[in-house]
Amino acid sequence: MPRPAPSILPMTDSSPRRHSGLVARRRRPGMAITAVARLIVLLAVFAWAGTAAAAPKIDPENLVYLDTAYGRTVILMRPDIAPNTCAQIRRLIRAHFYDGVPFWRVIAGFMAQTGDPTGTGMGGSGHKLKAEFSNVKHVRGTVSMARGTDPDSADSQFFIVYAPAPQLDGKYTVWGKVVSGMEYIDKLKKGDPAANGRVVDPDRIVRMQVASDVVNAGEKANQ
Image (cartoon, rainbow, N blue to C red; front, top):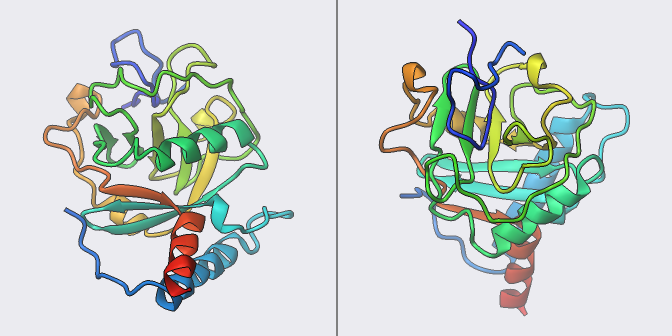
């Protein structure tokens, strides 16, 4: 049965269809935090190895930590293909916009959508983005911007793909790829397919951080 494509709008019969708290250990500041951050960078390098002829340069500024009650998911951003989108995501993360935001729409075998503080599918930051479509494929772990029918209506909402979704390729702005912790996204509470994946009492983002901020905080604490 065809499933709806990610959208920032509530899904209706006329909407596009698919066919077209935190559990974490406290870490001492300083070298421990920096070492963990470096380890994550190495994991990201290995995840990209052999998957692209010219992989993007790994930089903690382009790594995102997404914490849920299940654990930490690490996203490698792609400013090489979506610079404006990545810049907006970083800005919102640093403003703590995403902290506590629900995964309001989760469809098993398709995708998990978040980024709307209201949990209705209508919310956002109020700053729309121009589409930055690319030839990067929507495969398991791809992170892409949700939008309405207008290609330039993406804002703060994004989705993480559970399985290859070629029907989305070239139609949504890809800005990242999960390089660690996809198993925690798999654990998110699923929505009712009859309600277009809307989740009752959804799981939430506990916190999002840019890795470079974590590294810098550790280095300052170690001085």
